[in-house]
Amino acid sequence: MIQANNASYKKPELVAPAGDLEKLKTAIEYGADAVYAGGEGFNLRMGATNLTLQEIKEGTAWVHERRKKIYITLNIYARNYHIQGMRAYLEELAEIPVDAVIVSDPGVFLTVREIAPHIPIHLSTQANTTNAKSVEFWHKQGVKRAVLARELTLGEIREITANVQAETEVFVHGAMCMSYSGRCLLSSFMTNRHANLGDCSHSCRWQYVLKEEKRPEETYPLVEDESGTFILSSKDLCMIQHIPELVHAGVNAWKIEGRMKGPYYVAAVTRIYREALDRYLADPHGYAYDPKWLLELEKISHREYGTGFFSGNQGYNSQTTHSGNSNMKEYHYLGMVNNVLSNDVAEVLVKNRIMGNTSIEVMGRRLSEDFTQVVLDLRNEYNEPIKTARVGQKVLIKMSRPVHKYFMLRKCG
Image (tube, rainbow, N blue to C red; front, side):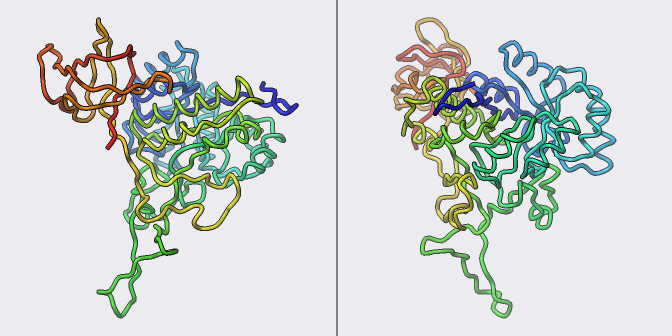
């Protein structure tokens, strides 16, 4: 428990996304207390790499060795044929000591209870739980934790958490959805790709125009003000400036969205929330927000940031992103340190082209470990000098400061 303002608060668990084993390990290395991952079926990110049952077994062992947790998503709104396939899947998953499964559909919930009653169940945000009575209902059925609806204010979250026995969890960072608690029909209607079955086409991110029936050749952009707006495209959630308020809400876990994102996103976001939370936990009374945290979060690909509904619905423009701000990206992820050899030479797995004699940033697990250097000596894995490193190559780079496995390289612009 944390003591602040003469009151006690829970120490929240930081939960990060893991679309594959690389991202799973990256999330833990960069400070996550737990990861959530999808299997090859029955989850709402079917476009992600996802994990085979063997990889879930391997990932679970790796996470548990480090005294962390892993949660597996089973959060589709299932059809009859899904339930049949899920039974066989659960029989195998039941043999792996995962820490919980995340569900939203009552039928899936019952199937888990029948096949794997020993696995704890977390209720997905897709179940749009918006009041304490709903949490109480699900807790009586056997739900251990409820991931609360994204439409709630901090005041409502605090009130729910104070009046339920179940654990609670909220999203604190990442992409938001214009539909209610992520339950979208637009993708299904426009592209026959079902968002509630994990195959969303992100139709809300498209740019739309207005046409008049008798003038089909004339199009008009849909604008909200002089700067214009994407009428359906939501801002990304970012609560880094509101750490004390989140802690005081009393929830058990903070979740970062992003199973479709890459390792750089997972690392960059997780480490900032880890540092901010740890700083508050260490000294609630002396805590001060560090502007560097937001500057770092600006270095990942994102839409315009906002605070969602945490402060209430502050109007249309508080939720929707503006034209020109749909996907801001200032830094390019160049690669990850795969091994450290003698004399501070790093073996780097290249993710984007690296040029010799160019300035790069090295990103560590903590901000204090970051530094900038010029790539003066670039060599291939056979220790032969090269001018350019290609995607997928393993290269050797002499580092100007000590680095460790999982450190990342990036470049502005």
